Amino acid sequence: MSPRIFVVDDDRTVRFVLAEALRDAGFAVQAFDSADAALAALGAGERADLVFTDVRMPGTGGLDFLEALRRRDATLPVVVMSAYTDVATTAGAFRGGARDYLPKPFDLDAPVQLARDLLKAREGAVAKAAGPEAPAPEPEGPPQLVGGSAPMRDLFRAIGRYAQLPLAVLVTGETGTGKELVARALHAESPRAARPFVALNTAAIPAELLESELFGHEAGAFTGATKRHVGRFEQADGGTLFLDEIGDMPAGLQTRLLRVLAEGEFFRVGGRELIRVDVRVIAATHQDLAARVREGRFREDLLHRLDVLRLSLPPLRERREDIPLLAARFVNEAAQAMGLGTRRLATAAIERLQQHAFPGNVRELRNLCFRLVALAASERIPAAAVDAALRDAGVASVGSGEPDSAWRQALEAAVQARLAQGTQGFAEALREAFDETLLATALAHHRGHRQRAAEQLGIGRNTVARKLGPGRRGRKPG
Figure (cartoon, rainbow, N blue to C red):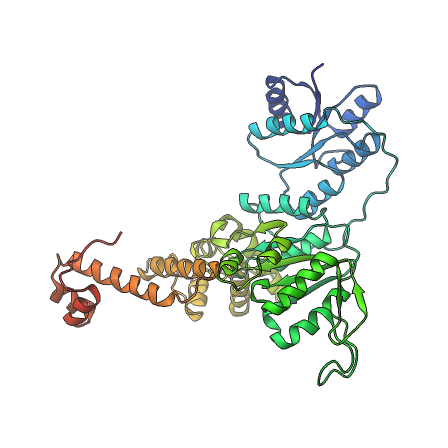
């Protein structure tokens, strides 16, 4: 007997195309325009081995439908589909028992392969009737991660899945990409949401105080310790501890952290009482920890403990289509914070923003939007205001036709990439590459005539000879 699949979606086109693709793959398919119709069919004795369902539909919504299906048969695999790929929706789906989440639009090969995998996993399983179960409480005010680009849809999907797992997560990404927001979202959508979320930037605490901040200390443990101090691990008991900039943690503390992750216990500084805690650790870094392991600056066993699940955040330059939505949110936030009326960016101003490299990522965009609102003379913020704000910040004007813009953005990207990789001492190499490109291009323009190239550049001919070396001619930079 062919496996039977239910396709539930109020969009006729999606329903028809998906059902036909599944039928072509050899499955028996029933399509419904509402969750209520699908539930009625199940109530009348119809069988489903797998369900694909939309989230937002008239009548019973997808998440309520998911709950109803789980009460009927907790082993029935359900795949949730939606064009609304925000953290709350994806996390709600996984929390409700969904096996996977398909953001719309999707390639039809994806649901067909997903159906094969889920049905194969279901084969031979013993069906067990699931008793009524109270729905998980909705978290209050989950952190706002904004974006509709493909990288962000993938991120939201991963957060929704990982939030339900009691495993350590390593969040990687350039400075300003929102690593703490991701950590807060993982906590807010997890079974630990009602317990504390505690954050600590390990790079912001002096090394001699970091041990006490993490594990606490007893009165008299050291000079100035006049009373017992409860550390961040104890504060986060039952909840989540977010350790930012974990790559900068001193070697000695790495050893202590490893034991806590392995055993769930530790001593306060100067204490003899063994403290046991239940904490999910989420660590974040902009550095290449594998490279730091090779350099002997980070413990390999600690990296393995932290890097059970990994989330890599895309830089803003790789999701420029999200900039209009982010900018609108930040402009509105700034106007409210300053007690101003409505402020909005002109279309040309948004285009200027999308052309900027944003080496500081979302944090830089937010700061820029606050500056634009603070200086805005009227409700509408023009493109010229963006150019002026970037000039004031020491950044070349974007999209303004100035020849400096492109190479400055490329240089910003090159520097940011090396910073993210943890590369050390790269300034001289970049300066040499800059000089070589500058001189070689000028020589190529003047057909190898060093005197003319030097005069136009405003440097001495000997400088050209010294930097390029004897006997070298101009070449076009690659």
